Image 1: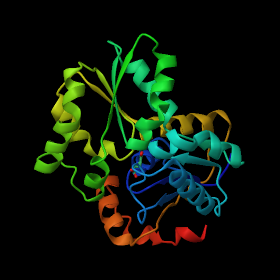
Image 2: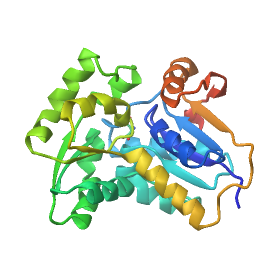
Image 3: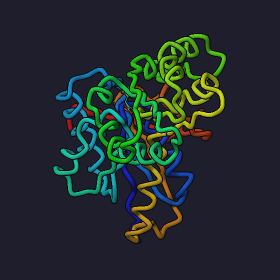
Image 4: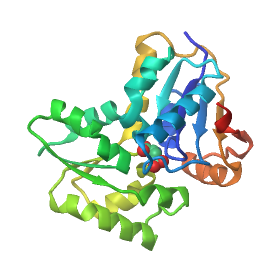
Length: 270
Ligand code: DGL
């Protein structure tokens, strides 16, 4: 039994896809979330910048006494998971392997689409794991740099002409390739799930990287007797820019008002 919270971080809103699944699976667990909203997006940045930001994000989170950290960011997970695990004592989980595993299991025809940020696609991390799990398969990868700004600006709902246009622009080659499974390798992308699934229609399974990782963390805690024994769970949210717009969009996505639980911090001091 372990009453310490789980730490979760991302560049912004995307990591909430993991928070929502963690909370669904383990409502009694406490969570500390950090969204680096002052520096989003990470996906177009250099490896050095991504590592520097991720180290600061973890340094902030570990000011809390945590039992595990979930890197709810495909960009950081694909760029620096091993490095961050080696540098920290706290168990750290990334989204790449759980998402690749879920896709490998879901695909029937072996044609697997992969979308992510430029840094995630450049790293080759998802393809590397998928090649091991589905040596018979083919991965069709596509960077989608405009998806994160769309999500951060709340432009992710069906009927939004800009979101629909950008989704069609990026995903048409994957549709033409006949994929039956799509790894949404950036945790922001599941907020566009309805637009993406309308675009593909039936027959394409969408894999949510943050959700897949949340299930792995839940299994790890259960197997290692680290689930909380408490009943007073708390979910706290920290951001590096003003709290208002994050709180508004996050409340909509999470289906509960979190306005009184979002605090702004200065991440540059960590
Ligand atoms: N949500 C993150 C990811 O999974 C970061 C996106 C970004 O900041 O570019 O890659």
